[in-house]
Length: 137
Image (cartoon, rainbow, N blue to C red; front, side, top):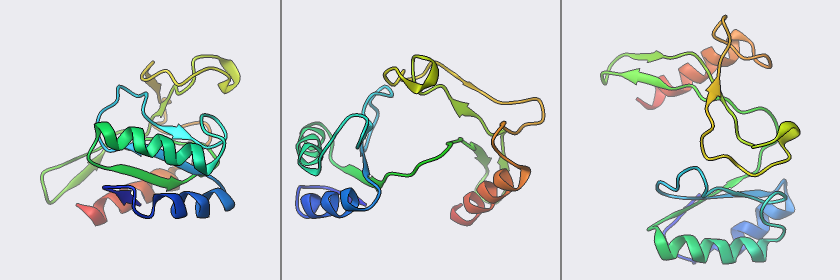
């Protein structure tokens, strides 16, 4: 959900906190350092509210999402407005130390594999990501 002000932020954060948790993202560039995840960076919905206030001091909008568990990959695509072509899926190096123990790196690179997949994914995962992207283009 995207918020342009604080109206409804507290209730939404509490709702997500009671489910699986929340993720807060500034709407704009932050050098890979703006995303805060409940459990990693923020403990409570109240801390999330305060971070949203800080974000809205510098950005016009803040994005709040449900926290999801699992592996993440990026599927970048090229489009001319009619055709969508996917590049190989990649996974970012998010944390500075082994075992995801360190802070977010803000861009230490990413990797893919020879078969243009990742160790945790099947070809169908990439195809589904492409289908989703094609629907929104």
